[in-house]
Image 1 (tube, helix red, strand yellow):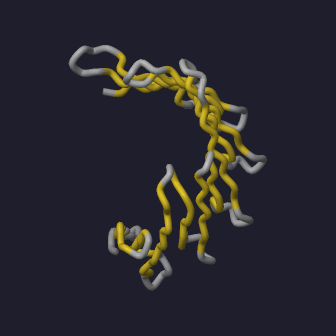
Image 2 (tube, rainbow, N blue to C red):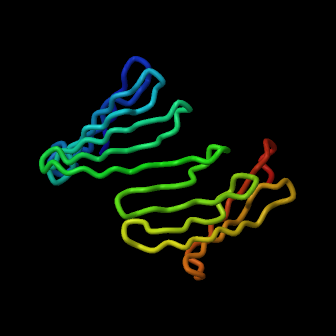
Length: 162
């Protein structure tokens, strides 16, 4: 079971997961926000009793550009960097030896993601099927030439007809 606590502005300030068998707090997180309403800090206690902290840094356009994951107990940290193209799409992700470059079509649909992610080689290609209004209805995802996913999206109008 989860419990959520909000401030007077409706922002989530604390989240807890309660173990239904013991009725004890199994995990908890507290959140802090900047003046623009972006989460800038999360302090958490995970299900193993490990405490950590995540810091979130944004650019002047409000886009997430860096996440710093900090292990408070052991002192290690992981840094994730995000770069955006001129249309505001995520164009690059970097963390340690990992780096993924993202490409998009003119409509802003992702068409490829290539690089290394958590030590695994990624060579993702995205292919779309569009309806007569230009909305994608089916997305196929291939990794290294093999189909790994098919996602179908159903779009209904205000009359509840497809």
